[in-house]
Length: 215
Image 1 (cartoon, rainbow, N blue to C red):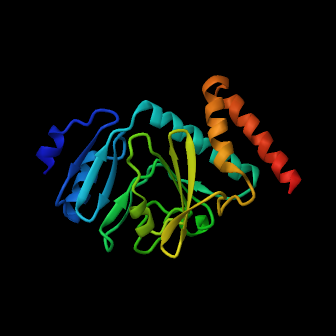
Image 2: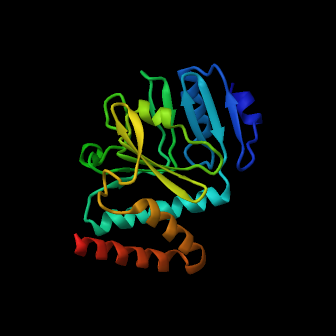
Image 3: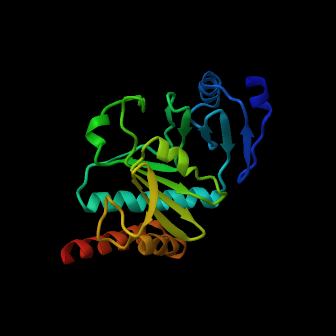
């Protein structure tokens, strides 16, 4: 398996599917790939997907992630951002690496931990997927019980909230109620392409402060 893996080249925007991958093989592959890599993985009951993101994908996920961080900071909410950490549960035979993720309401429970095991630790409260190449796997996030999944695709933000084990597409976030983020986040992402990151984040922070004052 490792010899075959080393021979695989995944061009940006493309993906490779490997079937009948055991959990032990998955662990070995993750160790072989290492942490410092551009490729993302998704594992669903024996099927392993390895995908290399496009530059556009990386830009979008970085800016959206920065906007979420700014939002949490302005609202004075403690959080922990763990980027594309590998989340997996052997009992469910599933694993995923989000584009970005945040521990929010459950942050205190994993604060200071160097390793996470979803058989005992809570999943991230909010996960972000930028779906440039149709990579999102909501069924895996549902199985891992991630309360909220943001999916950004074709310039639009979709907020999926977990209810009774399945995601519902809602207009408001559980974490940020009464804020019209479905329309605002794409707006500021688009603004960043011409105004720049720092200018956009300053404008977004000002918008958040105005919303707080109005509530």
